[in-house]
Image 1 (cartoon, helix red, strand yellow):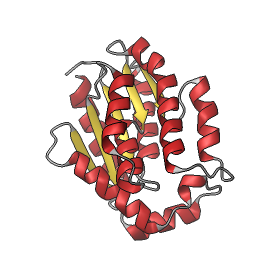
Image 2 (cartoon, rainbow, N blue to C red; image 1 turned 45 degrees about the vertical axis):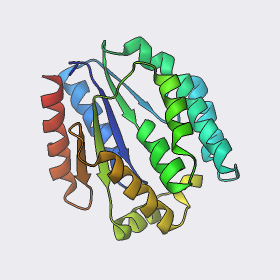
Image 3 (cartoon, rainbow, N blue to C red; image 1 turned 30 degrees about the vertical axis):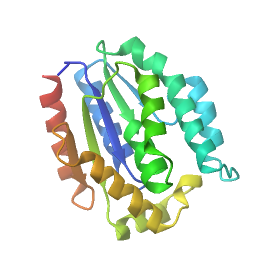
Length: 203
C-alpha cells in the first residue's frame, strides 16, 4: 500500500463518519503529517456549488438527475485528487461507495451505469482503505433529531437509510481493506480504534 493512501469514510447519516474524519485531521495536524481532506459532494470550488444544489431542501430532482449531479461533483474533484495522488494522504468524506449504496441500493439506479461512469472518472485512481461507520435505527433517529439544520438527504424514511446501510455492508463484505466501525459503541473507543488503524496505514 502507498504510504500516502486515499482513506475514505463512509456511512449513512448519523453514523459518525464526519466526526471521525475530523478527529483524524486533528491527529495529522498535531503530528504535522501532510494531507488533504475533501468531502463529497463538495471538496473543490465547483463541487461545493453542486453540493448546495443537491442538498437544498427545495430541490426535488428525479433519481437519475441526482446520480448525475453527484457524479458531476466527483468529476470536479478528480483533478484535485490527481494532483495529490500518492504525494499526500487524501481523506475523503464519502466517495464511490456512497454513490452505489445510495443511488443503486437505496434508489434502484442501474449499478452498471454507476460503475461505468465511476471507472471513467477515476481512471487509475484507487481507494486504499475505507472505514464504514454503521448505526442502528434508534441512534440514527436520535442523532438526526439533534441536528440544528437538516438537508434533503436527512429527511428520507428510516427504511431508506436501512436499505442504504445494507448496501454498504454488501460492499464491505469479505474485503480486506475495509474496517466496519460500530458507532453505537463508545465514541472514544472508536476514535482510538480508527487512529490505530491509520497509524498502521501510513507507517
